Image (tube, rainbow, N blue to C red):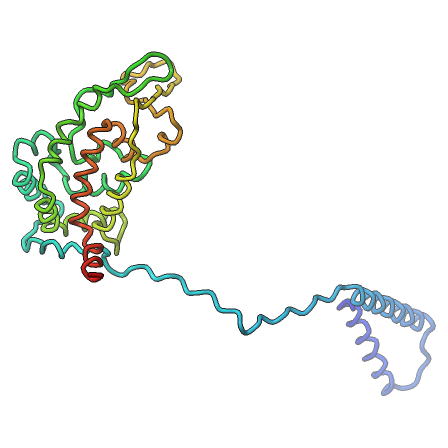
Length: 309
């Protein structure tokens, strides 16, 4: 029943009770008419409210869940420590410089591993650790900015063969990568892993700076190597096509606008595209070097194997 009608009825009831204590007098006919109308209106609204309540559907009772239904399992807890501890390889150097001042120390260590001439030829001298960590983290993604690479860009430009819309990567294009591939092959994987472990706090700090607090760079490195090892190995010439750029200003570097003609290959990550682009022979050599290095730094798997034995 509407609130205003309740109020009017209470007012009329209260008025009636008050009249019992007043001197008896004649009630004008107009007042009786008003009271009768109010009663009729209140009765009509009351009847309408009753009808509406009867017409509303009654919701069926909700069945109780049976007692034998198992509760959903709790979410799996994320690992609280590194899956591949680096201290299993070697203890970090006791007197490492801060990350901002680490270029000289890292360049010296690389020179001991690769030779000073090779380091000067292939590596960039500034921000070595940050460049390496950023590039590793970006290789499984769509883009890995060349400006963040820790090594010099390959000489010459990207070479293709054929004419028309669809061309192929030239066989001679692989020669651009020969130097860096030979450098990777010349390194003893165990020595490289030990050096990496001694410098590891610098890599870990750079990784956390990227926005991964509580995560571990070595675990990321193992995962990225696994990703690169899954790069396809083409059995024949790889087709590419030049992406059209609309505009009045012609492109000064058309060789950077090639993409793979195969949509599946074009959908590969930046790292896998590089693996394919360097040629099948070089790709297999790099994969062999990556497997050897991974075998050293995947310490969690080594521990599991020893425990199983």
